[in-house]
Length: 211
Ligand code: GRF
Image (cartoon, rainbow, N blue to C red; front, side, top):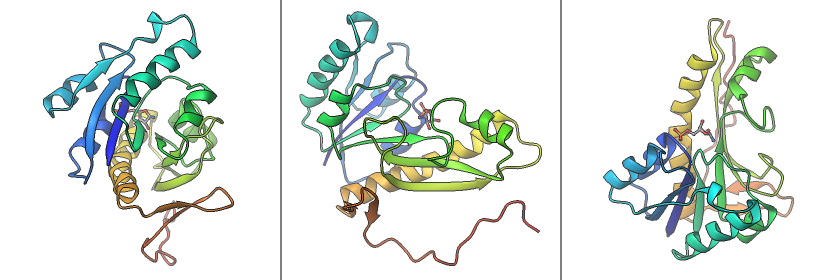
């Protein structure tokens, strides 16, 4: 299974994937920003890197066309967005239908978009977390593959909450990619995702605050 990862910055999710000992080949890491820290991490892991600066292209369509060409040189089975901070055109998303995934720092469908930790705190939610989902043309609304929930603590700040959610991101992103590589992920007719062989967690619950 060949994988291309797209990043824009720090690359901590990318690092978690590269270090998870997955049964996959990481063909390339592509960044739209030359200064992305993740590029050094990828290179240190022996993964080829490429920079495609969106500012070098006339518009979103032109950039996305160039990005598709660069990605498709590797003929990937799966394209992974790992902190790639660009909204992708419908044409791009449909080109990679069912083989494009993203991680979002909230329990979707709650808090799509940016500043999720600030909004979770402002909303007073008692559980927060992260979601791995397939990408469809509607931003942050594609079929959900995996989620992890954590309690929101009384003294949490956006920074502390973000740090604990990020730990969970690093846990569930490699897990979801492993399922995909193992061929355990199926789309149901109704557009939801089923993971074959998932463990029976029917009695598990995370209650917050706990009594
Ligand atoms: C993560 O919070 C991820 O959920 C969001 O962008 C951030 C990327 O962080 N999509 P990193 O570059 O993986 O460290």
